[in-house]
Image (cartoon, rainbow, N blue to C red; front, side):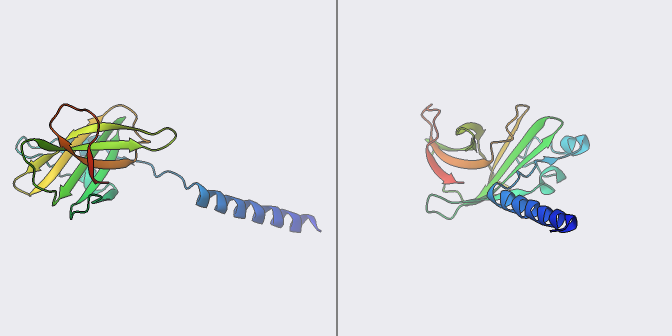
Length: 166
């Protein structure tokens, strides 16, 4: 076998190996980086819980599905700027609540070790008729990639209750 054929064979083998490695363990999508001007534009209006700016409209979103058997839907975004993480969830058609319950958001890490934390209570926006959650932190939460919305009894129990959207 000639030296040229050997180089071609080795190159082909490396390409095939790399292809199967990527299929087996695809690279993580980086979180969206935004400018300081876009961050200043996301500061919410005092009267509205919705943060409507290009910060979230230009970032990729994740569709949330109802896991409770209902018709609820939602979208979630996570954006990083200057070491700060901004997270927003907008949910539609969540079941009406009584005073004893509220909706709460969670970010979940599945690997390397499972973990989760609360991103806070959702707020209903009367004008748009949607549920909103805004969360920000300077802690590195880049490996928390699953979003969950739960229906929580107002009983001071910090554990997540019934999953509604994921």
